[in-house]
Each structure stands twice: as C-alpha cells, then as structure tokens.
Amino acid sequence: DGGITQSPKYLFRKEGQNVTLSCEQNLNHDAMYWYRQDPGQGLRLIYYSQIVNDFQKGDIAEGYSVSREKKESFPLTVTSAQKNPTAFYLCASSKGQGAYEQYFGPGTRLTVT
Amino acid sequence: AQTVTQSQPEMSVQEAETVTLSCTYDTSESDYYLFWYKQPPSRQMILVIRQEAYKQQNATENRFSVNFQKAAKSFSLKISDSQLGDAAMYFCAYRSANNYGQNFVFGPGTRLSVLP
Image (spheres, rainbow over the protein chains, first blue to last red):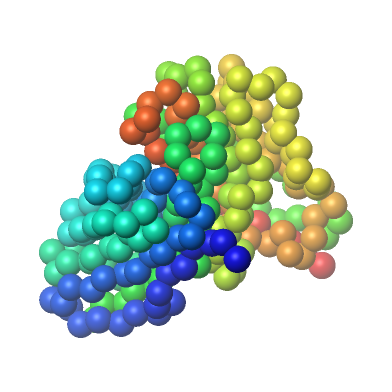
C-alpha cells in the first residue's frame, strides 16, 4: 500500500540531545513537508522540500534541520537549539504545485525532558 | 501573507443532525485552492474535501459539502446526517495556485463533538 510512514510513534529524549525523526513516502511525490502541532493550535510549517537536494525554511525553522537526499525520504532533526521541542510532528507529501492535497503520515510525539 | 481563520474553537452536533463549520481566509490572490482536513483522535490527518477557487460550483463529497463564497473569502463545511465517527478536529487550509513557493496555510482548527 502506498503511503507515508513516520517512526517512531513516540520518542523520548533528554534535553540537550539532538534527535532525528524519520519520514518515508512511497507515493512518488515530489514535495514533502514537516509540521509541528501543539495543543490548541493548528499546524505550523517547519521545513518543506519541492525536489531532491533542495529544501526551504517554513515559519518556525529555528532549531530544526532537514535533508532531502532521496525523493522518498525527508528526515527532520530537532537540535538542542530548539527551545521547546516537545510537540507532535507531522510529515506530509504532495504531488507538487497545484490542486493536489497533502497526504499525511501518522505523526511522531516527541517528549523532551 | 495569507491567513486562515476558524472562529469556532469547538462545536457540537446531535447525531443525524447537520452542522456547519466556518472558515474565512485572507488573500490578495485570485487563483488558489481550499481544503478541509479531518483529524480524529488517532491524529491521522484525512482530506475531507477540496475546492478550486476558479470553480463556482460548491464541492460535495457524500455527506460533506462546502459553501464557497469567493467575494466574502468564506469557505464553510457542512456535515449532514452527522455520525459518531465525524467527531474530530477539522482544519481549513489554503494553498496558492500561483506562487510555487507558497505552501499550505492551515487554520487553528475546530473541535467537533457528536452527541449520541
């Protein structure tokens, strides 16, 4: 079945440690996205990538980094510079520009203590 | 920059009844797309319905329909014959058709409860 996978579902880290969240898609989509969701808030864009080896900062990129070495993969690293990293992280992909919706992964809940 | 507003943080509806969720947006563009997404307790985001701004006809998907008022920049979602499985967060989203770098802009969401 085609879709987006994110692993793990729950992730726990100590403060000061970098952590990488995985996102893989087999939909052959060009564009991939990372969002952060906090309680009572909508989705905020962290980073996005329209093509391989290219990515752009979203609204809240500080303290995060990404790579896009393969079309299928778009990992997100939450660095120790991110002041409040505990959140729910959603990865999404879409065919590209146009009326194409985003498909979302199941999300990763990151807790940093 | 575009913004999306959902003025109802929470709504409730009786099972089998109809409910309308509001969404307004702000843009200077004439060509764009609008979406409603559903996020149930599992937190998996699911597309409910899509509307192209150049289409005057309101989109419909089974029990879900929209009232798209382009001049008023309004995009409400109507759920008919509400079911318990409709209980979820609903997000309205905007996407530019002209700006390649412009991505999805989401509203803050409306939490819908369905009462048996």
